[in-house]
Image (cartoon, rainbow, N blue to C red; front, side):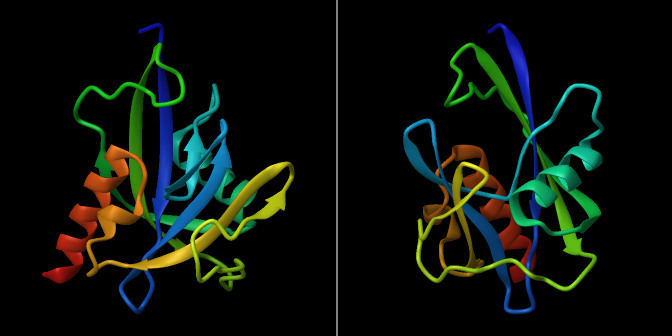
Length: 149
């Protein structure tokens, strides 16, 4: 491993017990993950998350609580020489929710050269099968368990 890759993600759950996910096309592959992304040098976690949400969704958010931080070794799927550390926060929107929502996976809209779309997935329907990356699968399973109880 040459360096750490720190990622920060926001978990937005609506009144129907659905969580917002992002479908993306990057590095020659399609994948589904939570909205968020890489922390920039000199940036705090929450500032980085707010920036990522503005860049990807054009949506202002407030962080309500820390939810999960990777607590095991995870190699980056895109950069094999990097160790991935992912931090997840529960978020709520500050302004009216104005994000265009798709009803099917990978219904891409090109924005600033990126291919992405957003959709809701139900927390009570084996949601881990809807996500691509192993850490996200752990997080959504924990999230579903929290909202069951």
